[in-house]
Length: 423
Image 1 (cartoon, rainbow, N blue to C red):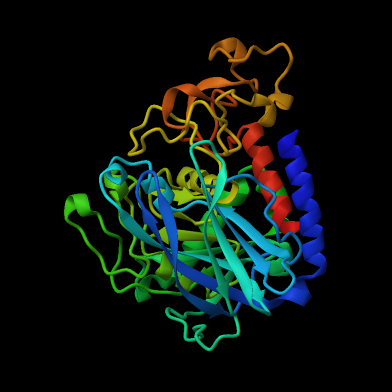
Image 2: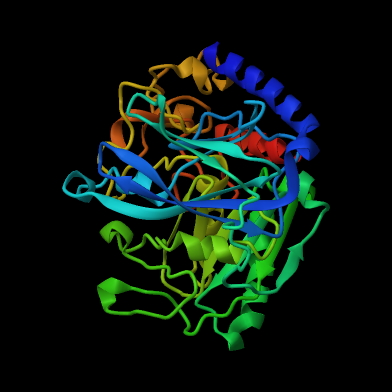
């Protein structure tokens, strides 16, 4: 009941905010960059700079994030009235690094940034981190002036955009911007064809297929000096704009980037809600983090699966439901609390998750046998561990290499996120 009450409360806050968009915001973006530093148990946020960007692709109505997803949250409060006028939940590469063995041995900082509709007046920005009990704690709070002459207006990495798929005004659509990584000037035509191909992949999967008219997809014509990406384990390094690399956290298939400033700089060339980096390589890999970015390779036999699977992470905070594959994470989910991700449960508070979708005759936990092959239940194994974490069905796009195979719980989470951006 507490979760339902919170969503209702935040929905009313959102209604209040949507009536006041023009009172508090201009229709462009303010980006706040910072350094996120710490170790496995501690973190803090250190302000860097503000940057003005030309497009606001997000909603002008639902300004207060009602979901309880993500490791972090930032809130924007108008300094004169004390009103909460914008809030967003997200995770980062830093939050994943905190679960690695390295984070237990040293402190490290990662460049990060958040975006918001451009405030008209001074505001407080507050950053919150989620602890192992999934409780949010205030970490840092800054008073900032968007009218200061220190707000940067000279943008880096400015390139033309193009429309891959358009269904309407950005403020009422889910806008995805696709960034080319490791495509040279001579390969820009290839990138445009790839954008069309991968948009087709997205709309072949349910529930994106049924909601196609709620999406816009943009591309950015941003060539790299060299083709491909870094593969450190093979001694391969390429000069590329987003500085992606395989072997992130020493996992060969994990292709990510810690150069978040360049990712944001490139994304700023179009209106966007979600960032997708398309890497020009045939090597299997990719990755995604909720409300951070998604990454996929462009020329692999599993590319369609990778593209849709990773977007499940980046867009709807869907958890990995597999447990057989190696990762760098240690105790990614605490087994004595309910995970924030919508498609995994520890059964600590199953009422909060998808129990309402389970038939009364289905046992919980649910045996992974032929009798329960196609039912929604709670199947042990998920979130990178074989015991203690449960998934909704025996199989799903978030578990196996399969396409158009999201389970009902994942479909529901994706559909709710689409509605958040478009209604």
